[in-house]
Length: 137
Image (cartoon, rainbow, N blue to C red; front, side, top):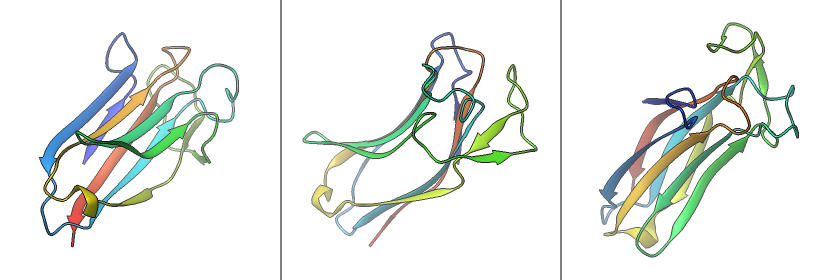
């Protein structure tokens, strides 16, 4: 499990990645995520479009597996979570499961990268919880 947030440094972004070799038996990469933010619904189309991206990068390709943003994602209100320095309006995407076919990448070295980026301010935070990363037959 990983938790990454925009409130980690002066650049207002944070990321995590892992490099590994796709085993010859693998057919599917799976993971779950839940994006949490104080910006949705209040700040849509106002220049505060925080984003989360998940990518699988090899020497021959870069595949975006997931992208969420303040302006375009579907959000649900969370009543018991308040991020530091913001207000009392927090939303989340809910747990989303990604399944990606990796058969064409068998035997390749890849980088699985997750990034959360703040846009337009450093007050209202966005974070993501990533979990259940697996490779299956």
